[in-house]
Length: 148
Image (tube, rainbow, N blue to C red; front, side, top):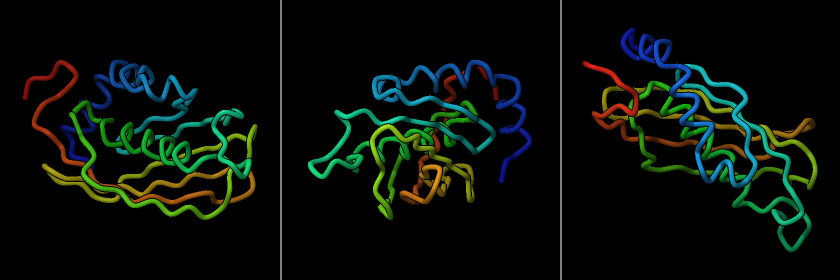
């Protein structure tokens, strides 16, 4: 899956790539913390606040989706090459509760020159909250200084 070029760019520009993803405005606004970043993988955490709840007192689906989408974006951009979401499908399995830590993990399933596919899970400390399958389009441009 990961080519030697992708691996080399990830390692050479790791600090810059990670900083761009840590500084992602929407994730920062929601309080998401990127905890792990590898080639084609990412993990982030969020402790939902009361304003992130739905009418039933559980974590709003949009918040769970946003956390899953954040690790999807981080994993797919982990090579320093611009990747943009094309499609995703999320399944909500259990309710998230306020104040508990939600953790999302993204893993690359397959990639080629133009497309890549990811599997994402959102969990709390007891159970699976949601799953997502997602695909990106990999542009020909890098967001780190790289000469091909």
